[in-house]
Image 1 (cartoon, rainbow, N blue to C red):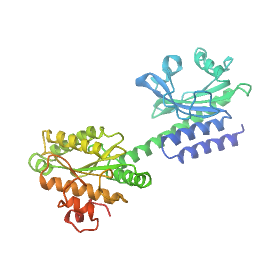
Image 2: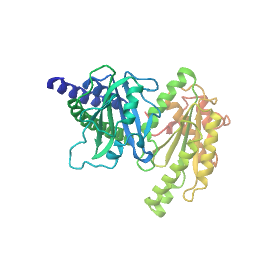
Image 3: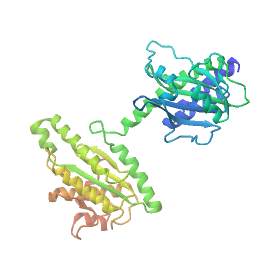
Image 4: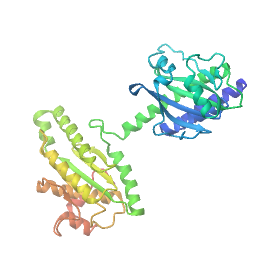
Length: 381
């Protein structure tokens, strides 16, 4: 491949990774771009998992052999099968420079290859009908991160030393793309995470609830929302300081997460201040109420605070049509407001109260200007 074509291939690889949305797309773009750049028929991107002593495949692209899924759930190889891994696992390249890529063939070591390192890879090449491969370590933040692997089929021209040198360049580009993808993932994570408790935040709840209500409208999926206020937080802050109040919030966040685990796939979130919620999509209304009941019980046992006021609204209960996330929020919030007014030690559930209850009036008459309805859920328009 001429210099101009190789330069164009490097640019295409970088652009492909830069345009990726999320890690999986970045992995695919890296492997596919390297495969094209090196004229391969197959490529894989793998990561070293030091704590497990294995090389785990993240993505396979191109002409995949039997058992090679695009995004394998658990395709991994123990370190002892690839002795060259140990060279990179404990190596650091703090001042720049990258470890060289190398070539292996189905016939044995290639010129400039790594004698003594080829046995397992040679066997794999033969088993999968491939004639040669080039392996390029990926270094990220001065430490071996994983490897880029590109292969050609049996009968195709064997990779040469120049291809290995080019693969080293490609691996450096891939490393830069992975670093960018990881930074973006971290930014996204922070954007949807409450910094104090580590739970989801209001933005995350809004997005998932909108999707959940759409699913409910489309196929009747049950959507349940548990909204709760942590009682006694202000008093803790005023008498014992905000550091102790933060500790109460963190502990309650752990309790909320634990109870949320009772509902498969539930989202546990801190909405702000002393307000928290659980959002469950799929489990029945009774299951959501059971989790809320357990939440009230465990919150009452916390050393700090005064328990929790908890309201539940579920499309699985007789609450009328739910055509918007806002309506479900209002119902759950009104139920929580009722629980707080009653100093209830169990959840109040929208649709399961008497006809004189403000929550029930809100269910029956969505347009009524009840104080609980006017309160609405803070921040939603």
